[in-house]
Amino acid sequence: MTVRLRAHHLLCLLTYVGKGYSPAFTANYDKVVKRLGEGEGVVVVSGPDDICAPLLGEPEPHCLRQSAAERDRLAARDVGTLLGRPIQAGDRFMLDAASLAGMRKAFSAGLTRQACSGCEWSGLCDTVAAGGFSGTHL
Image 1 (cartoon, rainbow, N blue to C red):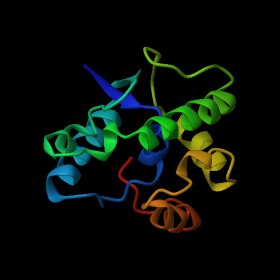
Image 2 (tube, one colour; image 1 turned 135 degrees about the vertical axis):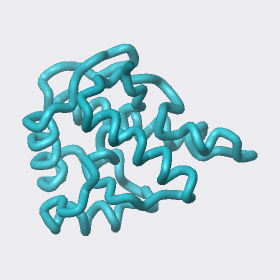
Image 3 (spheres, helix red, strand yellow; image 1 turned 45 degrees about the vertical axis):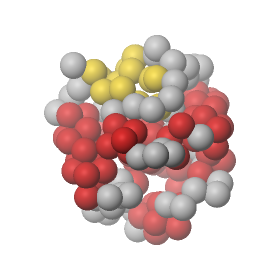
Image 4 (cartoon, one colour; image 1 turned 90 degrees about the horizontal axis):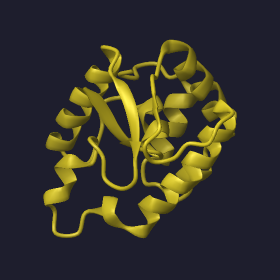
């Protein structure tokens, strides 16, 4: 199996500490993180992904808004620059310890945070990053 992730969730995963929009969302996120921790690969998708799944039953899921697509665009650009290759839908790769460490270092330095502008979770992510990513689930 492969975990389907939209580009901005490559950043969200770095600071995930078990908090989310609802209990169902958090339970699903925990399952996705567990799969990644067990070595499943990632495929980048355009639009809603495995993390978004519980939100898709809502009347107007935010994961379908243009703002989420713009976060994806910015995250793909910044993570692609960091990794030295473009990030686009269909790309497959592994999130191993070395890549996560490099992504967290860049995140802490603000190099990949443009996609986070205006996100309601940004304050939590700032705190997690400032704490050395202590308590993250991945």
